[in-house]
Amino acid sequence: MHPFSYIKVSDIAGALAAGRRGGRYIAGGTMLVDLMRESVERPSTLVDISALPLRDVTATARGGLRIGALVRMAEAAAHPKVRATYPIISQALELSASPQLRNMATIGGNIMQRTRCAYFRDVTAACNKREPGSGCAALGGFNRTHAILGASDHCVATHPSDVAVAFAALEASVHLLGPDGQRSVALADFLLPPGSTPQREQSVRPGELITAVEIPALPRPLRSGYLKVSDRQSYQFALTSAAVALHVRGGVIREAKVAAGGVGTVPWKLPAVERRLIGERPSEALWAEAAQQAAAGARPLTHNKFKIALLKRTVERQLRIVGGTA
Ligand SMILES: Cc1cc2nc3c(=O)[nH]c(=O)nc-3n(C[C@H](O)[C@H](O)[C@H](O)COP(=O)(O)OP(=O)(O)OC[C@H]3O[C@@H](n4cnc5c(N)ncnc54)[C@H](O)[C@@H]3O)c2cc1C
Ligand code: SF4
Image (cartoon, rainbow, N blue to C red; front, top):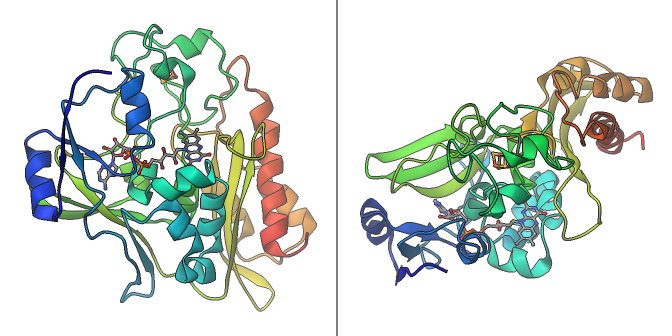
């Protein structure tokens, strides 16, 4: 591991001052320390933000929910407001990592986590994300777990977060505080597809601190849930996943929020599936038909063609479960 200095801050002003001087924030440390051990990340100063007052889950004045950046994954999953209003978030968190990791890791750190592409973590492999311009070993290598949606010639890595898929479905936004003040960015704009700059995974400005994730108000009652398909049932990243939220009134689907994980370079919103559902009555035929739209635009690689059929089946199954016909 490369040498680094460490400071622990107790207030937000102190964190922002240290961030302005080039310090790297560390929350739960479950990703950053791993990458530092493997020399993939080499920060010169770690700024421990774990004591900052960003650990609340609160209802917003507009009827949504605000989850502080330092709320642990386990705390967020178990929180009564989250469980009651957005079970989709609790389920996505409970299907992530392991209980030990969820007790340490934070919501802010989770959406900031970097890809799990094995070549990214192997400093002897070519990787444009780790070292811009060096090439992409996954393109001609073993790419079974890689993206079928949103990739570029520069990078085909998937986004690994489960809860970010639920946030994407719900159209959440990220609150940030930095040297230039406060701003809020839609998650869809916060997580960046690779394009020609795969080294930039999030639209965070230097020194900016995530303070919270906000989920907008949605009509009630909202049925929602998250389904994850992976090689093992626990402690494994998704091959495919589906986050679905439906508002059904008078027997008709009035709102549909659907996103997929494990298949895109970012959590993949599925507007074509959503459009097919709205205004229709729940039925087996509808789920099957809507799920056919899930892989629109997919471009599989040598080893991951199976993800196209798996994605459609994952979405169909989750529509059936959330839609109440399972
Ligand atoms: C074996 C293993 C299995 C896993 N399985 C899954 C899984 O199935 N699903 C899943 O979703 N995740 C999984 N994870 C990833 C895990 O969820 C992340 O490591 C964790 O969420 C990161 O949170 P953290 O608080 O520890 O972040 P840290 O390691 O502390 O930080 C991560 C990054 O976020 C930045 N950061 C943290 N907080 C802030 C903030 N408030 N503002 C600005 N920047 C910030 C840090 O600078 C760093 O770049 C797994 C991890 C491991 C090790
Ligand atoms: S897919 Fe992306 S992260 Fe993986 S080796 Fe290629 S450039 Fe690196």
